[in-house]
Amino acid sequence: MSAQLPGIASLIDRIAAFSADTRLYELDTPLGADALLVESWVGREELSSLYEWHVTCLSTDCHLELKSLLAQQVSLYTTLADGTRSRRSGWVSEVAQLGADGGLARYRLTLVPWLWLATQRRTSRVFQDVSVLQIVETVLSADAPRNNWRITPEAQDFIDNLRPRSYCCQYRESDYTFLTRILTEEGIGFYFEEDEDDGAPSRQRLVLFADSVASLAEDYSSQHANGGRGIRFHRDAAVEVQDTIQQLGCERLSQP
Image (cartoon, rainbow, N blue to C red; front, side, top):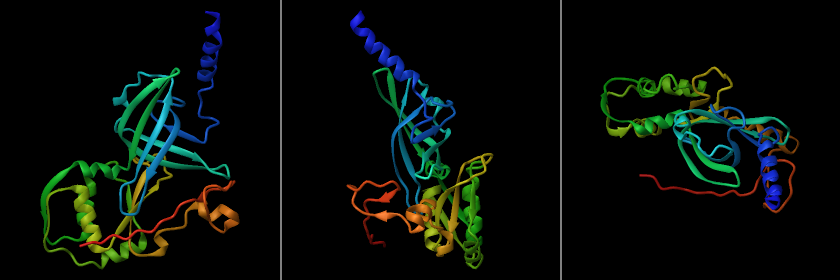
């Protein structure tokens, strides 16, 4: 019995120190503070596409009700080199328990933007003599009140000058596939930004933009890194105080 006491005491100390206060990442969920601690995360984000974050978390509770996290909005906070925090928000589309070890359970959450819901609907309909903006508004209205979106000023001017579509058909397409097809045909792109209004139904906002440098402002980290000269690019063997780009590639895709 006495030989096991140090191990038990160590476990108690680990659980007592279970807090996100001093960690690089923090996950804000409806479960409350410190219910889930971020162990690691990986994500994919690109223009005119849905982002996806996979967050692996630890918890002292190995019996969390997984259903309670599905379709909930959560935010992933990252502490930057200058002490400020960057927020990435999304809706939980998938949650899984990966097992338990040493008194801690491991879970994986998949976060997506609200527009992901449009991939879950398949519709057939016809639009006649309507503008592109009217089509976009009709498709996005199905996700109210989560449908937080805006159009950049230059994109608004561009859209206002587009000719109405005399006939536009959506046939057995998901709303997302149909929407992105229409936007691509008209030369309109989109991305997501964080809405600083905490009272907004969705913390991530869809932004429609046209071909303009003004639509894509330089990232905050790039603006302030390296004395305002941007983020350095070099091999990952170097030790850096600030964020750096360690791998960069170029790819071209043939389109019909």
